[in-house]
Picture 1 (cartoon, rainbow, N blue to C red):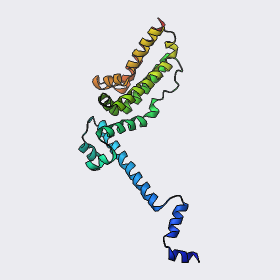
Picture 2 (spheres, rainbow, N blue to C red; picture 1 turned 45 degrees about the vertical axis):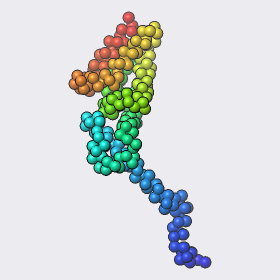
Picture 3 (cartoon, rainbow, N blue to C red; picture 1 turned 90 degrees about the vertical axis):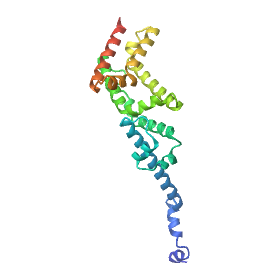
Picture 4 (cartoon, rainbow, N blue to C red; picture 1 turned 180 degrees about the vertical axis):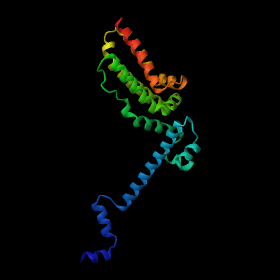
Length: 225
């Protein structure tokens, strides 16, 4: 029997075989298509919520998120269990996007003045990027253990970064003085201080950096006394 004869008996056989040879089937492609569509819609909803956060709306309703995303209110809850679930996804997305900003160039290298300047610039860039979601996270943390734990881990990472970056100054101190100095630096360079200086006191990004440089310089110059 020729190839043409086979195609007449089973018209779909050749197409199915080609799909199988390529590692997929029409059914599998349909499933993959649905999965891709679902992921796109999830991303659209998360991006809509982050956009609302950037606009200053820290607690948008489901209707507001749906309108911003272009999807129906009912659709939101096909992709997320509730608004808290969506909020966690949005905060995680923002943290992931800003992941490269957590890195501090030339960690621990250079003069004290150079290290302070690099740290101030890094924190300004990082906090500026994550500010909308970070504010929401701190509002939600008392009620959402997962969000609270993520914030705790981020703070620990940034604290260890400070400890390594200023190790030459820290290593000269006795244990109790070292803990106090690190605690003071950690508070100065925290997101909470950034938010206070930028929002409550109205400092520009450059003014924020200058303020941090002044504060850290005064703090670490005291470690030699």
